[in-house]
Amino acid sequence: MDIETFFKKQNFKNQLKILTCGSVDDGKSTLIGRLLFDSKSIYSDQLSQTKFESEKYGTQGKEIDLALLIDGLQAEREQGITIDVAYRYFETDKCKFIIADTPGHQEYTRNMATGASNSDVGIILIDSTKGILDQTKRHTFILSLLEVNHVVIAINKMDLVNYDKNVYDEIIKSFEIISKNFNFNSKKYIPLSALVGDNVFTKSDNMPWYKNETLISTLEKFEVSKSYIDEKFSMPVQWVNRSSSDFRGYSGTISSGKINVNDEITVVPSGEKAKIKKILTPDGNSDSSFENQAVTISLDKEIDISRGDLITSDLKNIKIADQFSAHIIWMHKDAMLPERNYIFRLINSYVSGKITKLEHKININSYEKIPAKSLELNDIGYCKIALSKSTFFKSYSNNNQLGSFVIIDQFNNLTVGAGMIDYELRRSTNISWHEMTIDKKKRSIMNSQKPCALWFTGLSGSGKSTIANILEQKLHRLNKRTYLLDGDNVRHGLNKDLGFTDADRVENIRRVAEVSKLMTDAGLITLVSFISPFKSERKMARDLFEKDEFLEIFVDTPLQECEKRDPKGLYKKARSGKLKNFTGIDSDYETPISPEIKLQTLSKNPEELADEILNYMKKNNII
Figure 1 (cartoon, rainbow, N blue to C red):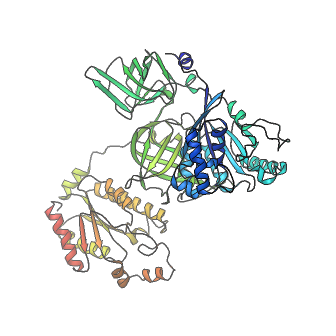
Figure 2 (figure 1 turned 90 degrees about the vertical axis):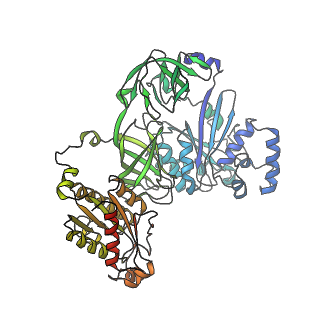
Figure 3 (figure 1 turned 60 degrees about the vertical axis):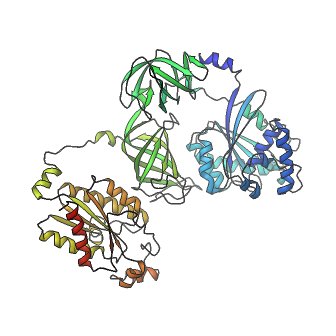
């Protein structure tokens, strides 16, 4: 079935995906309720229930609270706010609409970004009694970032300012100033009252000075570009379909372009080529399919394709790299820290990686690019990212599916950020590993020992350096080749530029872990004595090494005992406020869950504890 036939079969109307956004209490839910009510898209029983709940929750004399048609969660109805993204469908004689009501509260900005990622038009609501607020600016920036190129600025609650044209004009002037930073294809300004219905479906007699169209007429005239006509075909493989012994198909949703039977395709990353043999849709076999259709395709020959691969006719514009630059919206209360390991989900694949550099973040008031070391909740930044392996993508501006990703915490699986890829970094293809003739195995044989990293972690004053120093002496007497990396000593040289913020602590451990890996590669037993307070960075260090090369040694000394010892007077300074970001006082220490060795310092002296490590190493054939 070709595209034209498909549309005729569906009695095609233009379909528009709309997002409402703006600050809290600007009237987003009420506006959508008005659109549903005036388009007669509400069932009678739903309307009756809404009238009942309008009285229950109190609507200040209104017959019906239109916002309750949208706010479906109990907490939303009780608090009178939107928390989750709500999608609603309605249509007119000319157009079909899917509209998303997104939260205005700053803590739910991530939900707004989710709604914007799949929208054609953004309706930015502004409360005429308050004007443009910080969240209005943030949402406008996110719309531009996610390339929602058409916006309607709905200046709401005009009834509360007596339909004053001067208020409307001043808000337009203010919005023009902030929107000069963005390249929206179109901007439409409409004064309205969602509560009363002014200029939503019908022109308002209360604003005779407004000569342009109503909101619904404006929305009906937006043309959604049919990108599948011009773009080339790409489809990420979501499932390899083996429904019978003689059938092998590849299922997914087409992310761009159009495909026909007998078209040649290439599989990424393998580079193998084949031709389309069949296209299967929910309606049966088809001669062609296009963007956003879910299909299963079979090929004219068997080649190796797995979930997460890409089938495309656009190999020229597909980028394959392990490093790229991207805009990131941070969505979690725990800050983003450069060099911390995260999981990146791109299309159907999960890849570990890290944000190697935060170039800048955005001042949401002025849209200035300002320097920063980390991103906090709702911050927007521009970053460089390195993945553990190469993957395929396009820039977000060329394909929002192949150019977007989410960031996941590796320990609790929470989504902590979302990103839009700008471009690949050429360094990812210009640098390759150079194999050496003399390797770790040969050095290990020459040294007559198994190289490894002994990673001592614990609070300041726990006894890490003391125990490590004694252990190194014992290993030296056994003719073992060692090197001890001590936290304070390394900060005199390699890490002298780092402070004690969380971001600096992450970088501190990253550098030391890389040095430890090089020393282990040199065939040494490397003793590493660092507080290393975060489990994420200890895991990052462990992941650099081969199996059984990394021993985590938790020097378990209670905080009270460490404070009692206080060999450098640091706890006293921290308690008095003279020393900030001190682990155990105003910076967290995340206790190891399953270290190879756990040392109880209250019941044994340092000599005995060093022997405990030595015995473990002998028992496990390390020495």
